[in-house]
Amino acid sequence: MLDFWDVFFVAITLVGLIVLVFIVINKKLFAKSYIKIQETIVSSENLNEIAVLDWGDLFHFSYSKNGVKTIVKVIHSKEDYEFIITNSNKWTINTDPKQWTRKTKPVFIESAEDFIKFKSDEPLRKIVVIYPDCRRIIRYLNESDTVIVNLHDNTNGVHFVKFSELKEFLEK
Image 1 (tube, helix red, strand yellow):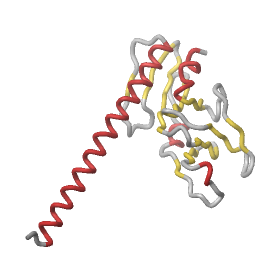
Image 2 (cartoon, one colour; image 1 turned 180 degrees about the vertical axis):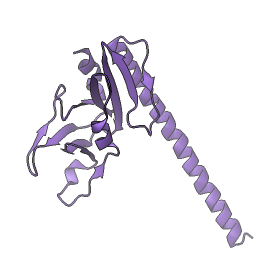
Image 3 (tube, helix red, strand yellow; image 1 turned 30 degrees about the vertical axis):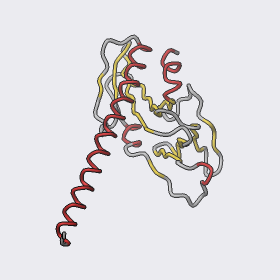
Image 4 (cartoon, helix red, strand yellow; image 1 turned 90 degrees about the vertical axis):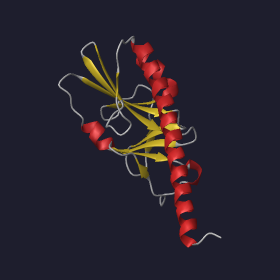
């Protein structure tokens, strides 16, 4: 019969294995999404080279074309989520638009303010890609009024684009 410590160590080992499997699966999913986004950018912009950065970086892709540096930040979402620009430097994902109330605690996107404030010596274009999709992208005008962000809108120096519209955006 197993005593307490045997059961404890078996349980800790199982939890560790589950966490490890989850991390590996997540990295593979991120890698697949990165490849799709990279291929779309390279083909749409007719590029030979694009810098791919790590997931934890401030942005995830960068490239220069015609003297303009473009940086791309990827935000993972689901088709039924809403992406919300709450003010000039805070973004959030609404994971349950049907049950949302004013008391719902928002899930803010990390490093949004740093991405907006990022500067470069050359002219800079900033793109946020919502991958794979979201229901809609909304921007607050004030505490109660919102507008839907369209494909070519420039919001505080940033273009917010759903992955499904990325090719169309880049080709214009």
